[in-house]
Image 1 (cartoon, helix red, strand yellow):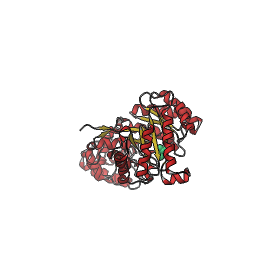
Image 2 (image 1 turned 60 degrees about the vertical axis):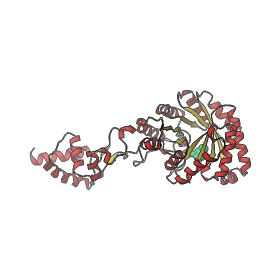
Image 3 (image 1 turned 180 degrees about the vertical axis):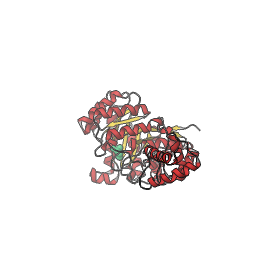
Image 4 (image 1 turned 120 degrees about the vertical axis):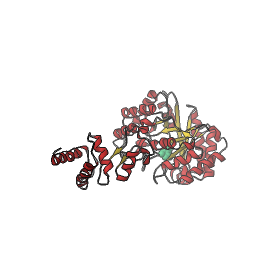
Length: 388
Ligand code: KIV
Ligand code: ZN
């Protein structure tokens, strides 16, 4: 069976940039946008043009720069936002307007002091208005994760009739369980008239640590676009991490789904975004964390030295990391020590290793990690003592 493509919608420059302290200037956004385009991203959400003159400028400049990806601008469901986004996107080769409104009862009551019927009207009007400017209009039903499915289906039907080409079903508050989110997508696939004319999109936040799991449940149930960010950056606990989605689909071939992202650029992208945003990546972050391919316990190290596959499900080169690393700590064993000595040019015999290992443990018990310089000192002391 032919594998189906999942479109990757990157919102690092919009939702990702909403992280406190992660503000980027236009020049930095252009650097990231250019690399995202090379990475093979299908849609780059460049910003929210009406939010500030700086954001308007960034969306406009990114529109001029990007060669392959669609460039998208966010709006609320009103004419002024849409006019401004259309103006910012006017140089884009493939422009997309992303408009929408809150659809959960809590948003309808507290944010809009409105009714379900009125929200449907406003949603459809916004999409119709955006269609005056661009063919490609994505609609987001904000807080869809907590929106009643039957009502959500009515909203989707109305915006498809108005011309929406993509339906974004955000779990804005990161509330859903994977099963629940997957069922929501399935329900919409089965119950929205005209759904074949639009692509369903997942946009999941990570408040309960379920953003990636929910997005994967979404694509398994029929969504064909995932909205995500490099390093999982985004409001509060963040968004779905792009690198995780790409590698899950790559590693689980049985899902018959793929992306066009060049996974070998993932590590470099992660470092660049972390650097420009001044936002460190947690060391144990899946795929791109500093420890993602580091082995430190003796049992694991012994296995990996014999054959990488014993404890690694991804070849590090697949994500742009040269090789896995063998970290020396007090939990490491003899084979890791011999491996690292060999790495710095010392082949040691079994008897030598027994002696060196005891010396190594003395230091490892008081130091977090043993580096190559420590190993050299251990070796020098050994040579002096044994007059080698
Ligand atoms: O989380 C969300 O609902 C959003 C929308 C504005 C798409 O970011
Ligand atoms: Zn969001």
